[in-house]
Length: 418
Image (cartoon, rainbow, N blue to C red):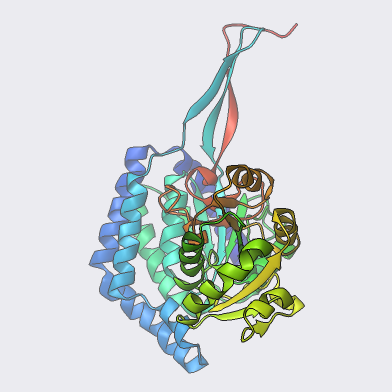
């Protein structure tokens, strides 16, 4: 079969399997997930043998040490995948949840029932552990899933898929409920993105280039976030000691992730006192500051910022710093350069804190907290399948509930409409 025929047939099989998955009880879903966890442990040697094929190919292609690290399925990574499955098993099942029941004047009772979305398409890069995380979350939420990982992880992803499919079949569930596209050709993505009748939602995870490609070429709704340009605004009423700790944690703890701090905005009345304290702390960690003219006067040995630094997702130990006149100026900067990921204000002024929460349009808005908390696990969602900076139908970290929707349900006892 051609690439197009193969992908279409695979998606059709997944659509058929989705009806079976949607009807599974919580107990059965959890039992299957437990079987998957046990199989990952018992077949660790097989997984790592297949993973080594990808690592050898990656070294031959000259992948960076960081890329190879993300590709490696070490004992620790496999144990982490098993732990993630156990967390998902422990989460409440959202499917079938009924809410908003109301009696209407006509006598009917109208409510909402939470249901699966159907078939989820995941397109992702590098990390083969995403295969297990995504498949498990989709299954617990009653969805089937089509997974298209990066070509650099093809052997690892296919091995993991086989283990997950074997666990499905052991409990009488169609293996097609979890599919990994076995084709590394880029055309496979284009075909996948055209199948709006068989795939209900596309979730891309990876670099900005991949996500923009998916968004521009998909006929299917896409939940996405292009990048994480996270800001902190240090208000004039901030506790400087608190602000220093929060900024340091937000920038330094894991600078290469999407919820790390990329730009710091400081009220002009706080800049003279706060910025020298911050420079001393950040320089000890090797952070390069790129400052606006006003900030550079206060920190003369900093790098002068250029226009492209505002709105840049550095993903390394670089921080853009700007002194602003007031909170209005800070919020205007966020509107112009932010990515609707995470913004935080450091202040002891209650009115300013509440205004910032109300008026800043971002999927996570914080008061006196590190941007690094913008994460499904930290928000109590358990595991997350990604972060959405679109608003339909999810905004922010996506857990089980964001992999479902609601339908209206109606109870009557013979009513007809007049």
